[in-house]
Structure formats: structure tokens, C-alpha cells
Image 1 (tube, rainbow, N blue to C red):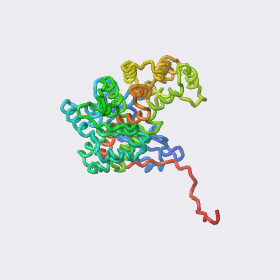
Image 2 (image 1 turned 120 degrees about the horizontal axis):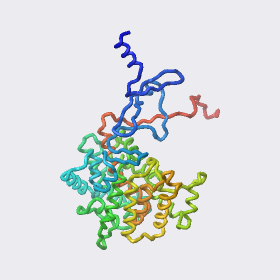
Image 3 (image 1 turned 30 degrees about the horizontal axis):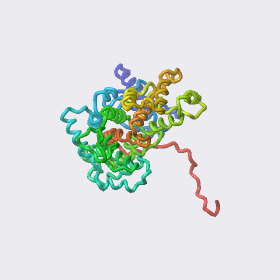
Amino acid sequence: MSADAAAKAKAKAEPSPDTVTVKDSASGKAFDLPLHHGTLGPSVIDIRKLYTDTGMFTYDPAFMSTASCESKITYIDGEQGILLYRGYPIEELAEKSTFLEVAYLLLNGELPKPAELSDFTTKITRHTMLHEQLARLYQGFRRDAHPMAVMVGVVGAMSAFYSDETHGQDPEQRIGAAHRIIAKVPTIAAMAYKYSIGQPFVYPRNDLTFAENFLHMMFSVPAEEYRVNPLLARAIDDIFILHADHEQNASTSTVRLAGSSGANPFACIAAGIACLWGPAHGGANEAVINMLKEIGDKSRIPEFIKRAKDKDDPFRLMGFGHRVYKNFDPRAAVLRRHAHDVLHELGIEHEPLLELALELERIALEDPYFVERRLYPNVDFYSGIILRAMGFPPSLFTVIFAVARTVGWCAQWVEMISDPSQKIGRPRQLYTGSPKRPYVPLARR
């Protein structure tokens, strides 16, 4: 055999650097699977032809080891505590940008130039009002309806009012629908709150920033002038920035899965809101406040710390540690500063529940048990403290999360619809039910 032929044979026998070989131990057959490399993070094994080649599926409950799509929007490194929007560290964006700058970045891939930001801000501002017939929809809900239930219904109903933007085939209509949703969701959220407490709706104002406008719609009343506190507006703006997107989490995956069927964007975002409503996803900051209420007093903290350390006790300290971030939550450091500033600004550092929260924070940052296990306070811990201090009821915490995450959902939906390789989502299963069996007539059962 010539040297050239030997080299070719060797190359054929050995898998290329861009493939991995899997072996079926039962048959002894080996299969080469393509390997794809991202800009950052782990490489992925392409298993799209696995069933065709091997007759087998993969088994990955909750998809914890499965990349469901290719995306250029958000990157997370949980081990290092890194969160990037389009390559920019979240800490820098929170410090130097506004929420609408970040929204533009997520939607378009680049930070806006001054003229682009001005144009984008004008488009969002001019879309903040709701159709009056849509506003009347609130009267169909019970007064004590959960605001998230109202959000799901009203956002879904938008598809009946903006039918020209429901199919998503035209790129201009896609981005138009995204602008409309981003602009109107804060108004929908504020109206849900006002309806629940029996106050008149407050219409949006074009002279206010995104965060200022939200606070004004939430807390102003027609009987007197309401002045937005700049420090509180900045805290809300950063809460929006920090929650704007978080890779392929449950609600984002829901938006993408709904969108893969061709569902209209309003229905897709409503589906995302419904998923976010779940206590295991968007309700964590509300759970922090409920936990603080359960503890009740600083004198009982040692008792609950002991329970948290007991692996046989079902009690868990909410707002500590994170499923993704194994080191620290980069968003928490930003909100920690805001939490202390907001409490000082409002003069409520000595409110019992908030005192309790600050004592828990101190213990978590000093106790070896928490430090060794990296159970640091996360973004939900601090956002819960801030929102409660500002006067938001716990039932509104997840709504505010939805207002922020709408931007990420829209960006992910636009990216997915624009992807020529996207298909309707269709996960498979490991069937463990009864094998095929004959039907037994009713009289013989």
C-alpha cells in the first residue's frame, strides 16, 4: 500500500475532529456524529440523524443536556457566573445602559447609535396606549383575579386587534409586532394592578422614560400629582435589564415551541407568560417574601437556618443559590446595591421584614455552610426586597418579571422565525406503558 493510500485509509478509519463516535454495545456498530462548536461554551453533538442511523432516541428529561436551537442572543456560564447579552456583560449593561438600549440590543444584535435609539424610543413610546375596546376586556375578570391570569388573557387577546401582525412572514411585520408587544405589556400590567385595587386606569405618558412611565401608571392617581423618584426609576430599569433574557429557560422555550407551529406572536408571548407564572420559574421572588413572612422575626432565624441545613427537612431558604449559577448570580451583585439604596432612600431600613432579609443576607455571606456550597443570595432575593420596599404587592412580582422578559421573548421569537432551519417542535419519549394488547368487549371485562 502506498503512503498516500495508507494516509487515506487511516483518515477513513479515524473520526474527523468534528465528529464523535458512539458505539452500540449490543450490536457492536459504531456511528460518527457531527460535532458543532459555538462561539463560547460547550460543543454540541448533532443527533438529528441519530434515529435514522441507529433506530434510537436520546433520553434527556427536562432537556438539561440538550441544545434545542442555535441562538446568538444570550450566553450563560453558570460555573463562572457569567451572563452576556449579545456578548456584553450584564454588569456593564446595567451600569451604563437603559432598558430600551438593551431591548434594541437584544432585538437587533448591536447597541444603538444615538439616532437609532431615538427612533426606537419614539416607536416604543408611541405604541404604549391600548385600544379602548381592549381596555374594556378587564371588566370581564373578577376583581380578585390574579394579575398573571389577566396578563395571559389580555396579551393573547391582542391578536384579535392587530391581525395584520399575526402571521410573522414579513420581517417588517415581525419587528412591528415585537415593538407593539414590548410597548403595551407595561400598560397591560399596570392596568391589571389598578383593576385589582379598584382604582381608575392611568394612561401612559410620552414625556416619561420606560421605567418612569411604568411607575407612573402603577402608582399615580387622578386626584393628585405623582412625581417619579429617579432612584426608584433607575432601580426598576435595572430590574428590567437584568430580567430581559436568560437563554433557553422554560418560558423562552415555551415561546419558541409555540412559535414553531406558526402561532401568532401575541399567542406565543401569552404562552410564555403562562409558563412564567409557575412558582418554579417566575414566582421565586414572591416565594422569598412568603418565606420571610413564615420566619416572622429575626429571633427565629437560627431555627430556620438549622432546618435549611437539615437534608431531611423539606424547608428550603428561597432566594439563595441558583439552578444555573453554581458560583454566584451576576445579576444579584447589581441588585444588592440597589436594594440598600432603595431602603435608605425610602427610610425603611428598620421595617421588620426587610430587617429580617438583611440579616439573612449577612448570614449567607458569612456562614461557612452557605459559603462552601456557594448558596449566595440570588437575583430573586434582592428583587423581592426592592419591589416590596417600593410598594408592589407580591402578586405583581411575577408580572414585573413578565414585563422585562417580554423583550427577550420577542427577540427569541424573531430569531426563531428568521431561522431557515427551524421546524415545528416535536420531542420524542421513552414509552413505558402497556405493550400492544387485544381489545376486550365491555360485556367480557
